[in-house]
Image 1 (spheres, one colour):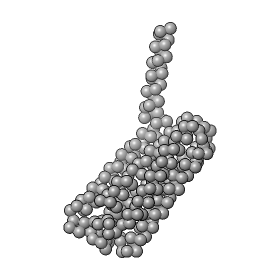
Image 2: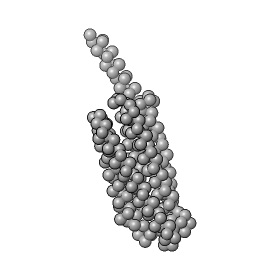
Image 3: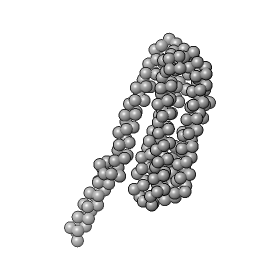
Image 4: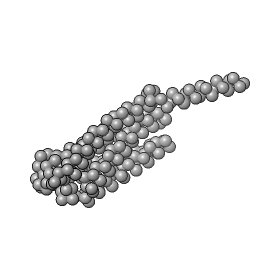
Length: 210
């Protein structure tokens, strides 16, 4: 009896270890996403470091208050913050197998992302009309306009990719019967979306506030 129980416990422990391993199919997606996001963090860090260098070393360093609209930046921040909450709730409803609520929350997340891109496009158009360009800045250092378009454009591309990613995951979720393994794709998509939202907070603070 004791030996059987011991074998059962060892088998359960081994199964639990395998379930948590990043090498099994269910976890490969999240493990790969972490690797991808690590590379993205490094790229954003290089861009921020370049901006900080010009911001604090040039005599006519970038002055965001003279060029950017803080209200627009704040609205964009609220949109992504709301989308993060919707994404968090969607994962919660997924565990409870409420497909209708899950789909609505994912659509809210994507709609907030599209609204964010729309506001960013409006701001870009306004800046270009004022004479901004990759190598032109009417308010001071030319490096600011170039880095602004590169940083916000790079982040905006991530938002667009995230919207397409969520749409694909939502379609796949509806095509499959309710299964526990469907938690993993949406969790992975949620991880990506939270990263996109988090990076925007750094962009907002660095470009619009400081």
